[in-house]
Length: 130
Image 1 (cartoon, rainbow, N blue to C red):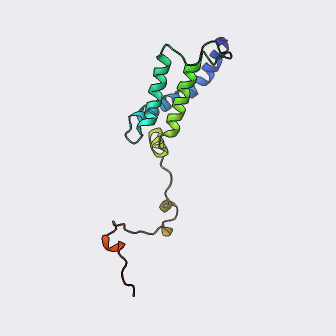
Image 2 (image 1 turned 90 degrees about the vertical axis):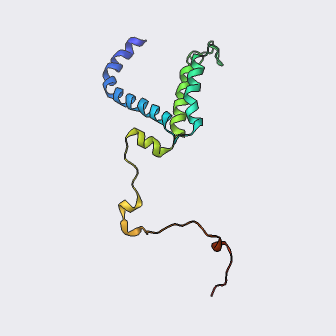
Image 3 (image 1 turned 90 degrees about the horizontal axis):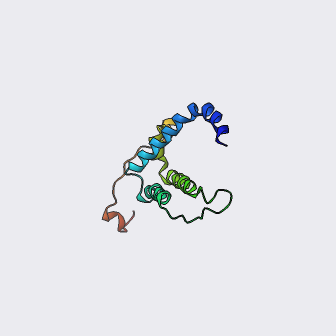
């Protein structure tokens, strides 16, 4: 079965290898980034622990390879969930993509400049209007 995969690997390998390396680097950087919450960061290590753990939740006798490849399936799901639970702006940054365009870049005349200030206690009290 694997002898049929070698020509495909030799044909598509040089095109896919840089993308795979970029994706793995982005995963590593996202895992170390402080802007990503703890829950997504725990998904991939827990999937790796499940893969190393000798007791499987899915028995190996289940047909169609589901029992034998459950570790790979769970790791792939963990990576997919981690990638989708990370903030989009942080993912774009680590993938080297430019930030999305801002409204003032398209039409600077339609943007109103202003200042923000914290509300005072005097703003909460109703006063005479006149």
